[in-house]
Image 1 (cartoon, rainbow over the protein chains, first blue to last red):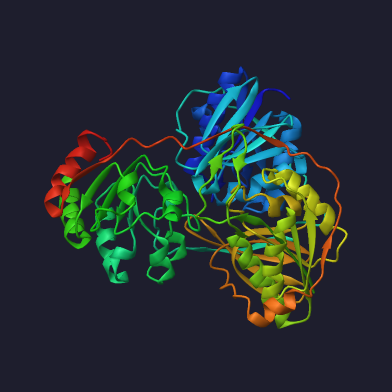
Image 2 (image 1 turned 180 degrees about the vertical axis):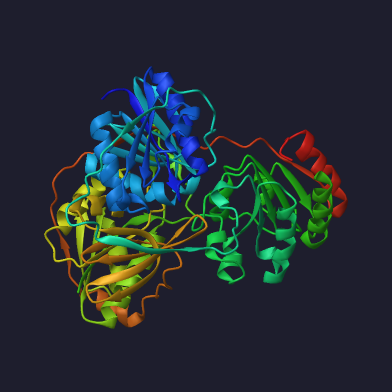
Length: 325
Length: 249
């Protein structure tokens, strides 16, 4: 293997998603530590113009696989494209974001290339000439440092954890011809139903204002939505209790059976802090807890806490948040 | 219709996990084991499809001898039979697990192969998709809805800001996500019937894990936090700290 670290530059609708930059920058950092090069791969249709941007995040080479058949995501086709690019680039590691697309694509590539694969990694390092990754297991109760026994190592990286640091890369663009598998894909995308609200994706948000059982009623989430509207990069989340009660959609759920989030700031309102909820948010940089119960377990992980009635505290927070702008 | 559901025997989500003396394994004495929660959605969906037409649901479990309890749970829900690949190797990686399961599945009639989207011990979310890759089957992961027509299905899965709708022809692999269905509890009748349903043990070839664990650690401890105050009056001080100390606002 060449010492080349390959990053998957995820794009949808011919625009990069933030994790593409995070993964490219992570590839650049670990490649530097290994004395190798970072490259990126961009797959889609009409994406040649997109490619050069990844040079800003340290990609020395950018492989472009451009074909009408690749216009929208298809696991069978994209996996074939990555495998074809890997034959040319010979990477010692391939990094994908642990996004919906990355989580679907990376295992398929690992199966085809017969490599080891580590998912939802939160740290990478170079050790003994190889890439090692730290990843949470048992819902984050334990962290495991792992490496692949195969020559190539595939990893998916948790969004919002790796800095999308800029570092100038040569960005030499090369084309990878796409040879579609015979007979075409057997699972085909019919359509994408967009969420009307245009709500910020929880796993990529900077700030999350989250409500739990203490919210008492779905109507009361308007308070949290208002608070979020005055905080830059903020969105609203929910605990399992709220989702199971039908107050909020499952896509808002933070926790072991919901989403794992890594915002800069997590504000937990009326959330007690059960282990399964902590599993989803304990890698937040800062945690604020608002709860009537001073013994609520959430206060053990919170950096800042207010003991009080959220229906009094949150309106006061809205007033303070308005002053910020 | 031949439906296979691959399930796993995992520690209960409340379990306290202690790192073993060697630093790279965990101490599983005293841990309560259950059917992997995401696999419940898989078993339920398989049973719904079987009940809507004609078919047979086969459970496959790779795990220790005492995992038969988890197999019986699936049989009690309504699965017809099971294959137990006996092995006590809780840290086996996803890739080698997939190779072993694929090798077993390829010799069985299969129209649909279900997996839970991930197991709550290793949280890999890999095995179902890797089995599909190895067997050359179409796959849709983390499905939240499924409609079956002749020889194919329409699936929905969540993506950031929306939902992808896929059509897939059989045979196919699907991994199941919360929201797909409401898994049934086994009835007493089901539990009694399960005792008579066949569980075959099968041999399988030795396959090495491709991921090695260098070290297990407890997550870094968060520095102790502070209660800023009580009620609405503490809010200005909170914002002051978030701005000046944490510098996040």
